[in-house]
Image (cartoon, rainbow, N blue to C red; front, side, top):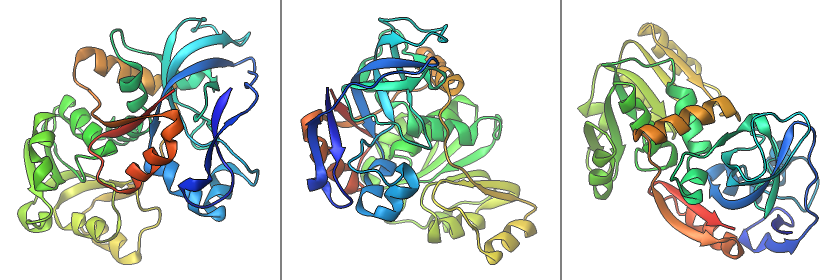
Length: 313
């Protein structure tokens, strides 16, 4: 089968389209004939550093990157009960861990997949995986109807899903983006928009119940300034919080936490239900063929993506 191999740590020149053996499956896995792959910053950033590659994938080189897939089940393991050959499925595979998604065939734990919504394209399904799961796992069970929710970076992958999920949960949704993306974020459910290029959100907002932070750093620090008493911040960008940040949060009787998304077929089925209900729709910014994976990585690295980058197989 064809797969994109990362030969060694470094730039996109180290991504090579190669022929490799088709994977075999375990009893609890299915073999998926991949039709589309979604890219994330978590795909593109580790490749530059052996230390990060080792942390994510171990020491073996070359390696196959990626976690987000949509495709057709070709084979099922003996312990798999809910899928059969021919099923159209999507999911984030083995995260955190080694997903090996950049390939024509992927061995995927059945517990990490869901059947695709009827009428959904492979591209749209692949796009609604890691970023959508991140937003769902942050927001589900933590916000309620009427909460004032600030989604930082609302035009990006996690952000544009966060807006839609928070809105579906009944929140009043505020988001930040550049002015050129205002119409987009408002069209997907934001109630209020802050142009980060011309406005300081920490001066414009107050009494925010929940902040979904994807930036860390100064944006995270300023997010504390807009929190209501008892408010909550969840960050995808920060793992450890300084004593000063923790002290500020305690004074507000608030909470601050980090999160690392995890593969979950149950959560994928929640996303499927939202897609079927029309409350969740991915925005695909650009699509590339598998042979142009290097160009797709470069596009993600620009940091200008509105929604998601998808690669077709």
